[in-house]
Structure formats: structure tokens, C-alpha cells
Image (cartoon, rainbow, N blue to C red; front, side, top):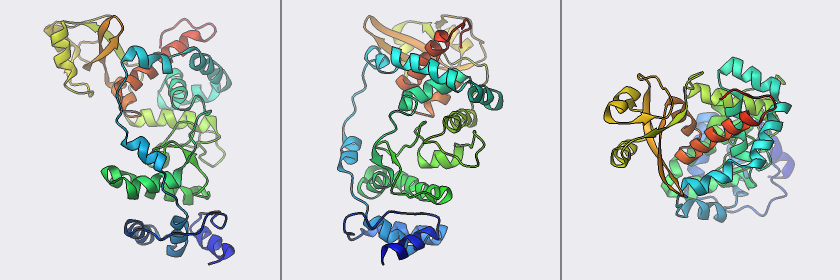
Length: 333
């Protein structure tokens, strides 16, 4: 199949690939062939075009190495400075100023505060400056066919990526992203891109790579659909006997016990909180010892973006710092 014929075939499913410039095709694995057949049957993709596309995919050993490496969580006092720092705070203030209208519109439409959206984008890509350099197609294919531990998940993301490329009429070989296949300013996985991303600049196209308004609206929509409670608390420090707090912290990150019940056990929040609110307890390891905090429904919502407690806490604190650093700001988030 020559280049013109191949591109015409791929374009029939609204995908355009620069395949002729790639290295010589290689034989496809049985898993890749089965996946292609599924895409043909379920979504009416062109079989020959997909086979030619996947023949150009290269296994990303760096991605496999990153996925297989053992991650050792850093204590909070080491983790925090990587996210809550002057460049991100100053950058957050500038980003807010430059996109104030879109952020205010997102607040009105989705009920999510601007500082949370700004802090999330800061934490993910430093406002679009660090969106990742891994070819998304190669990354997802590698993890779908060469990483058995999570193959099912990444096969689903690969399916969604090809559907997304077809919908946006983009060359699937072009997008770059993280070592897990996350893309764009807010680092959405393909499933999230198709499900939560919105055209917030009104140009008729959802572009999370170049449009700050689209990224802003999409992050706010993501949080809203995961249950963000407008005006609700996120987290508050609490004091309690270490043994009791440690036992509660083992019960998971979803809020499970009311503040009133925790007070009855001996927990004392640092500020007034509605006794009826469900909460969970989590530790933060400081240089001086361990602090304990209560996380509420909104804290849990942030963990839907990234399931690490440290990540959610970093976004929360960064949001507060960005709001406080804005000229004329006096209100807490």
C-alpha cells in the first residue's frame, strides 16, 4: 500500500498518519491483531489502515521501565516544595490574570473555584510548559500489549485515543504526552478527554494542547462531575491521640465518618466544621513529626484527578497560596 492510498484509507475514518516516513513495518503481535479486529467490528475502522498504523508503532522501553519501577513515596516535607513553590505560585497569579474571564465563567458554570483550576494546571504541566514528550500512540500500545499487569486498562485507553483522533481528525502518531499517555495542558487520559473535556473557547473544537480556556473549562467540568461541592471545605488540620488518628487513617481516603463522630472520639479540628460532614483522616509527615488532617468530600474529589493524598494536599495548598498572592486578595479559598 503506497503512502497516498494508505492516507486515503486512514482518512476514511478521519485519522491521518504520516506513516511513510517511519521505519519499515514490523510484524504485529496476536494481541495487536485482536485489538485491530475489535476496532473494526466495534467502531468501523479500516482494517488495513490500522494494521499499517500499528506496524509503525515502536515499543517504548523507557515507558515500561517507568511503569515497572518501584515507587517509594516521599514524606510530605520533601514532596511539598516540588509543587508548592514560588515559580508555581507566581505562574499561577499570571495565569489567573491572563485567563480571568474564562476562570470566572468556569466558576459560574461549574461551581469550581478558580484557584483550584489554576493549581491543578500548575501541578500537572506548569501551565502547559511540561506536557510530556512520549508519543501517545506508542506509549498506549506499549502498555496495552507489553505490560500485562495493566493491559486491560491501557487497551481501553488506546481504544479511546483512536476514537478521539478520529473525532478530532488528527494524526494519531503526532500527540505527545506523559509516560502513561496523559495529554495536554491538564494531562487528561484519552477516556477523560472524550468524557470530560469541553469546548470552552467556543471555536467548535476541543483542544487541550493549545487552548487555555478549553483546559480551564475541562478541569472545572471534571471536578464538577466527580462531585465538587461548591463552597464546601477541602481539608482542615486536626489534633488527636496518635494511636487513634493512625487507626482512622487506615480506613481509606473516601470520607466515611462524620466530624461529630470524630469529635466524640477525641478529634479536635483546628477550625469550626459542620458536625454532619463526612470526613476521613490522613497523616502528613513533617520534619518535626506527623500531623493529622481531616479530608472532606472535596478533598476526595481532588484525589479523583490523582489518587495520591500528597497530590491532593499539594493542589489544595497551592490553590490557597495562589489566591493569597493575587493583588488585593484578602479572602481565603
